[in-house]
Image (cartoon, rainbow, N blue to C red; front, side):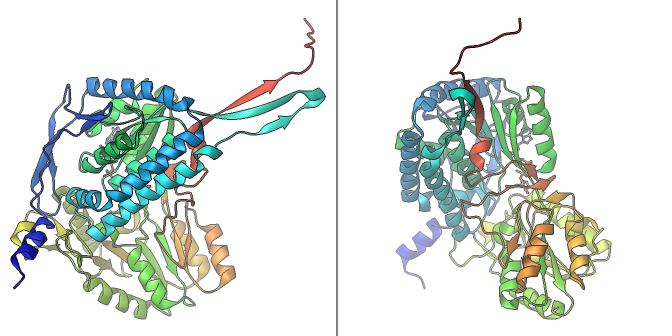
Length: 507
Ligand code: NAD
């Protein structure tokens, strides 16, 4: 009974009616066709399985063009003061804010995540531009007074062209989190988004152009492993900043090692979240849900191993199951949808494989873990997995406890003592994040200090303020994103010694 104009609006803001007709490489201030595509890749709308466009696996000539134009732009850009660079970054933040809804919609077509989350993702990109716009003018070195009037100082200098390679789960956020500090530091960027989510990086490039950035300062080349590998091995690239899996990260690091190229790696995780029996149970349950079900569970920092003290185990798990079963699954463009589609059928099969093998190994599935057919026929080509909780009978050594599932799958385990849970929480090759819910101050600090992870959340989870550094221990990565410390990873330090006296020599 919805009035016709309103029905049309709902249809427009639903999945299945979007196509991309413009080229997706962006070089020197404009969208351009690939010069030498290695092949054409179908870009799928996850919600429907529909092909929304084809894009190139960009070849060597495309990468060469992008790096050449990026290098030219970088030289002039590095001559600006940090304050001048910062003003343009701040302006781009304002322009991105004006396009927040448009780009959030693009992100939904590309990723299958709910619109409400996509809006938050664009906001985190805006925040990055604003934050690094603000601190660009503060990038500086140190001054040293030496003997007899001599002195020294350090300069933080740009690296040159930065290759930014992204994963598909947070495309606009990843592009902006890499671009903002790189540009603030006087570098230029050649961005290669994931081949599964090519769209929003190009929108970001258009925003930068509109803001008045030099043409070529932020270029985009599309493609998968071939284009990525060409970039990471390119002599014109000074640094690679990479977000993706450990397996690919290792290849990227190997490729950078050949020419001793700088590299930052933001990789996967299998993070622990510990709920002690003295915690606020309602907050802990909310925290555990937030730690697992954003973006259909496809979040690197997710606290997928939830350790719950035996005294509160039954109560917490009962609540978690109830809340998880109530999660509204559906068209990611609809406002009430809380969980959308998996990125593609191949990834959904991988996640279902983890769940099936866990079942075979003896784990009990408390809820979800099924491929769901949506009522709306438009969505039948998408892959939807009902959010899943796997019980205590999933032991620490099972594959589901060790490997990154990267889907809507929460494992719950019960524990008895602090010593036991710290040991079990750290029993992982990963070390991206960790969390603890407790009202005991001393315990909170003690456990946070013991976590072998780049972040530890106390009484919350999956919060990413721009000023707080983020990155991994162990195989979860190298370097940091966000915060002022990230400028160290996007600049190089020069030491200048200044002699004020005559020079003696023994020769
Ligand atoms: P992936 O490793 O398959 O791909 C990541 C990127 O690398 C893509 O752009 C891909 O095209 C490119 N690539 C593939 N082979 C390459 C090669 N040989 N050389 C250079 N580039 C190459 O990862 P994914 O499936 O896109 O993303 C999921 C992974 O990303 C998960 O492990 C997740 O935890 C991780 N992730 C980490 C963070 C973080 O901040 N730590 C954030 C988001 C995602």
